[in-house]
Image (cartoon, rainbow, N blue to C red; front, side, top):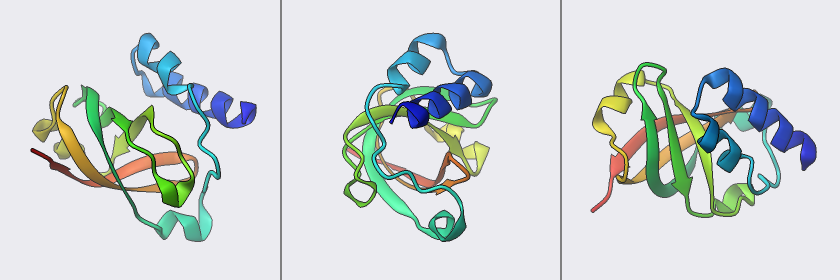
Length: 116
C-alpha cells in the first residue's frame, strides 16, 4: 500500500497537479492495481464529481465513487484524458460518469458524460 501511494504521489508531482490535490490523492488505497498487460485493455466505469480540470495538460481530478471491479474505495484521484479535448467539456463541480483504463500505472479516461 505504501508503495502504491508513493508511486501515485510521484506521478502526480510530475503531472503538475496543485499541491493540495496531490496530498488528497494519496489518501486511501487502490486495492489491486492493474498495471499494463491484459489489464490495459480492460475498461472500467465510474461516477464522480470533477474537482479540477487542467485543459492544457489534458488532466482532471475526480472525487469518484467506489469502483468494485478494482476493489477501490471512493477517493479523490487524478486521471489523464486520452483525448485532451474532453477537458473543454468539463468544469469544476460537474457530476460525471466516465470510462477509463489502467495502463502502466496511469489512469486514462477514454470517455466522459455529464450527469444531471
